[in-house]
Image (cartoon, rainbow, N blue to C red; front, side):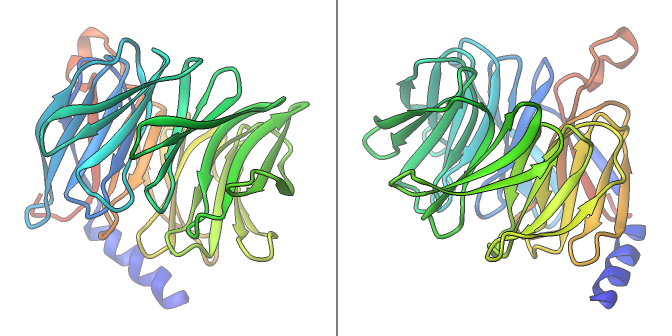
Length: 325
């Protein structure tokens, strides 16, 4: 464990360069890699989804295509877990859209009952879950593009995800100012576990790629790492000072990136909680995503549209690059 930590600290001393790529004309709110790591998608306040192609040899991104059609900001997106050419996006325009990178077209538009803010695709690829501002979660048949069922919650739903085996469904939520994780069996959606995870609003959740752990980020500026089987808190990360709005596990499950309004992204070693690296940023971080096969982190910040930094508006950053970049 110690050797990995030391090796990664040494690695990031020589792989700490970053590049930025313009994909939108307004702030980027969400990013995500597809399953094979050859594409990166970004969603923005400009109502668009942009696809970048990743060159693994040169470790560079190239803008491929921009999808238009949403009538409001794209708040979250996610890729099909198996088919690398499909992704879905959630928007405040009360629709979910499925995009096909092979045809550069919208494959389906599904109308929902509210302004959508979060979305996730089940590991078996059959279901898309989307939550709206009214705390209604809708489950969509991803093949038929039809609503399967809906579930209304009486608390503030912040983010949602499945476990890797597709039989548990997680919600982060807020009740009376406290942060909880509710775990339901799926597809029955009976509540099986309730975890009081944070003293503040529980904002985000991510499952470790191998399913061993999950992590939560909170308005209390804490990140907690949990054992998925025993459901106990293994450790808490305390280095950030502002609400944690985005987290991501590396492909090997050993690194956790956390972003907030702090002007730094924290890279922690999951096994010890120690800092491996820190990425200094100019603005609060909206979204972070590790590459599914390499120690490369994509992220996007609350870039300002002021006159001195026009070029920063609508950019995606890639960090973890070596000296050749």
